[in-house]
Amino acid sequence: MAHKIGKIDLALATVERDASEPKSWHGLENVTEGLSVQNCALRKMDIQRGQVTVNVNGANYDAPLVVPCIPHPLESGKLHFLGRPFDPSSYRLFDSREFLDFAGECFRAAGMDDSLSFVTTLYDGARMTLSRRLPEADFKDAHGHGINSYINLLNSVDGSWPVFANVSEIRTVCYNTATANLMEGGASCKHTPEALSQFIARFPDTLAEALKAHEGSANAYLAMASIPFSMSQAESFFAALVGTAKLSTRAYNVVKESLMPLFIRGRGCYGQTAADAYNAVTEYYTHNSSLEANAPDGSADQRKREARQMLLSDNLAESIEKGRKALADYASR
Image (cartoon, rainbow, N blue to C red; front, side):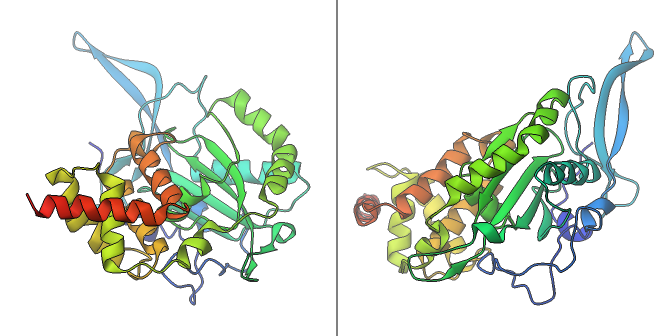
C-alpha cells in the first residue's frame, strides 16, 4: 500500500535553503553557497528497487518489472511507492542521485562545472528540480530592476513527468514556480536510455537556444505583482476563470470557499496583487487535481496557463467585469 507523504521535502531535508530565505516564492534571489550536484541534500534520498512477483495458480513468479519505493520518513516500517512498475530495458528510473549525476553530465557537456543554486523535491517527492544561476542571462525589466536568471532541470521519479530543461528568471522553488517555469519554453525528453543520451549530447545546443529565447524576456511574475487587486476584483477574476456566463453552484463554491481564502493567505499570497491571484490558482489546481491533470496539457495545467494569460492580457478588465456579472447573476437567482 502506498502512503501519501505531505511533508516529504522537510522530512528528507531535500530543501536547500539558507537561514534568511523567506518562505514566500516572492523571494527568489537567495542561494545556498557552495552547493553542487555532489554535495546537495537530494543525495540523501535513497530510492530502492523492488522486484515484482506475480502469483499464478498458487505459484509465485518473478516478473521482469521493477517498482521504485522509499522507506516512509514519517512512519517507521512502511514504504512509500513512487510510481508504477517499469521495464528497465526500455525505461530509465532516476532516483535523486542518478538525476544529480545526469545534471552533472549535462553541465560538463556544456563546459560548465557542477555548481547549483537550489535543489528541492515537489509533489510528495515524485518530482525533483535543480536550478543553477546563469549570470550571462541576467537582464533588467521594464522598471529597471535587475533580474537574475537560472537554468532549471526538472524530472520525475515515476515517469509522470519528462526530463525538462529551460532558462528562466524564475528559480523553481515550489509548485507555483514550477508551473511558471514550464510556460517559458525549453526542451524535454522521455525516460528512455537513448533519448536521455541524446539529451546530454544536445545539451550545449539546448542551452544556447534557451539563452537566445530568454533574451529580453518580460518578467511575467513582476508584471503580475505590479497589478493591484482588490478583494472584489480577485473574486470576479476567479469567477471568470472557473465559470461561464452562468456560474454553476460548484464553480461558485470553488471561488468562495477555495480560491478566495488562498488569495488572502495561501502560500506566497498577500491578498493584494494579480500575482497573489495566480498563486491561489496554481495552489488550488495543483493540490485538487490528479497527476495526469497537472501533467503538460492536462486540464489543471491548462487552467493554470489560462489564468496567467488572462492576468497578463490587455483584456483583464473585461474578464473581471465578466466575472462580476456572473457573480451578480448567481446572487439574484
